[in-house]
Image (tube, rainbow, N blue to C red; front, top):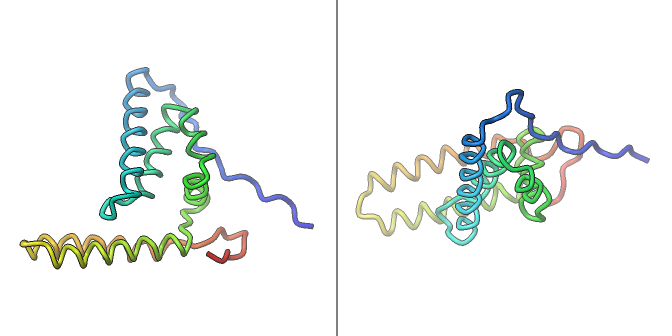
Length: 147
């Protein structure tokens, strides 16, 4: 029998309490990032995962309730916990992101009047894809999962 795996570490508690204004700024950022992440589900050129991670980061500084909702969400919670636990990005997510970036790059090449702008966007997406595939796919203490 294996011992239960410890839960993902909680975000660091800030040593200095934030002012009310700063907490509101972080809350607005958390909600804005969440909205952009939700839009990204339906709009292929807008990435969902980075905005959800940014939303969790800002919520950790402003709203324990929003952070708890994000962490317990069936779709967002696992990616937040994986990221906190060593920057893990699952293979399925990598393939999905790569596919969407490839489709977006193809669309830009076919529809853009400005080849240099399309090339710049594709270069940025290529850099992101290269970085993404460098991320670990599972936690060091667990075997790889089938995605």
